[in-house]
Length: 155
Image 1: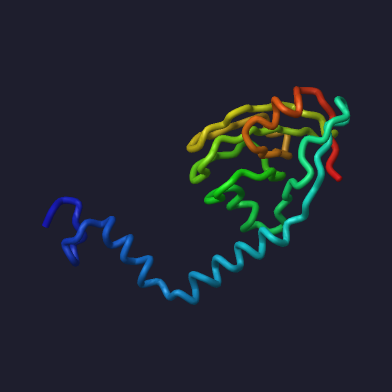
Image 2: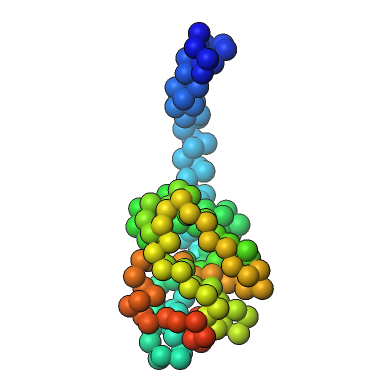
């Protein structure tokens, strides 16, 4: 038995983990995926406008309603889409397949910080006084000319 093998089967641990997916009852797996999808569908859609520059940033930003949908965010998504989250301290992009732009908004809906081209498998922290974050597809900050101090609205 190798050093990395499972003590019961002698197989590498990775093989056991891959095999475990197939042993999981399919009905439970599909119901979990269905619940997650339903939570994302139950998200509300908002239009985000830059009031300072009188420019629409996005028209279809999702604001997840459930804890599960907020926790998952863009993890595993095949394509980027605008997402509004209420969180403090920071976000991570582990499990996200694409770079994104991030806008941090204060309580008066003014842009407090921006980060363009946040790559996958990274962490982005900000001042915990700010609790609203907008995750946008890459290039949106430059295209919409968003800068610190701009006032935004969510409708």
